[in-house]
Image (cartoon, rainbow, N blue to C red):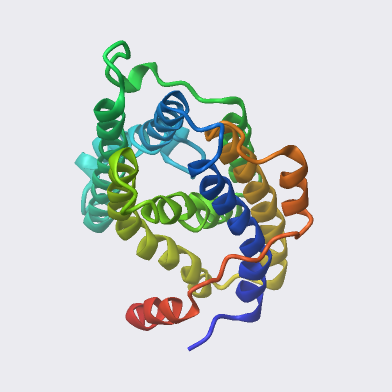
Length: 269
């Protein structure tokens, strides 16, 4: 069982940009820019994304946590009348997963902060310029292009799990790095199958060649914005020249797990 040529091309053009986002994180771990303060900064920013990230077509654009929660509340009197019980179960699972991921990163923050740094408060977390640019782009694409825009946003979410995969590779270095590695391992195991299912699920949606052409354009724009978002999150370990070089293809593409994709497709069928 293989992926159609349009989806294979979408993966092909995405792979160098997935690799670029991975390079940001991998470079940061041993970069001279890395300090306790920059670790606390990226953890705050990642907690913001896990707690209040937006742009994936959530209910009323309320975000990754509040959107599904609000939809559940509004759906309660409609369950098995106008709203499927399975839709509500999926929303509950989404909230459980995302809030657990927030807790994992917030727990690291509180474990490594010094005594002069206050415990993490999610209501004080702030979006940063590059993440706002990505979020606004996604919301605009979702509203302009409808289902294709939402599919593009879900396709790019997590950047093929690059942060979590690169974080896992810190295992064995000791101290704070082992804390980060364990959190990333748990999140990776939650996210990888869901992410891959969302990608290969495009096979089932009857998309035309024109749909794929539009989606490819949206995906490239989002993945490029993701690299700059992630680079800023991690205190700019990559130079602007290196980011531009990645955009121009000067990087080994991130390998895509086609065997795992085939397993996901076979299970779906």
